[in-house]
Length: 180
Image (tube, rainbow, N blue to C red):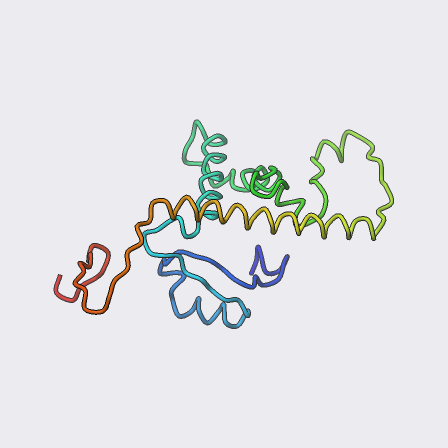
């Protein structure tokens, strides 16, 4: 609510892992009240939500770079890591997340303080067309990226067809059994 909803409204859909915080009845009811559907990733299969996994890895790299010497202060650097991530052009879309959301590149603080910026009159029709084209391109690029990721994951997947009556083994490695 504090960081997303108040700024952007409720998302239509959330993809999450199967952590207890996302499978709890409270969370399900909360999402229902927001009008948000939930998709849970496959258990023990990180490829299902690859975009979030890549984002987390990138944020982790930023935080390690910022908090190199003292690993106990990394939480102080989360806003800087978020800034860096949101202002980096992503290969899957060709745009920075900031541009996709706001329709302009972020103006660094130094641009506002040290330089007199040219303030141009924004022509609404041109801007609307540019943003519509940007969003179409982003949607197409994300679909292509998702297809590439799916293709990579599918290479590792062995598809087997089972018939009724076939005997199969079931791994109970990640299943809680009553008598175990």
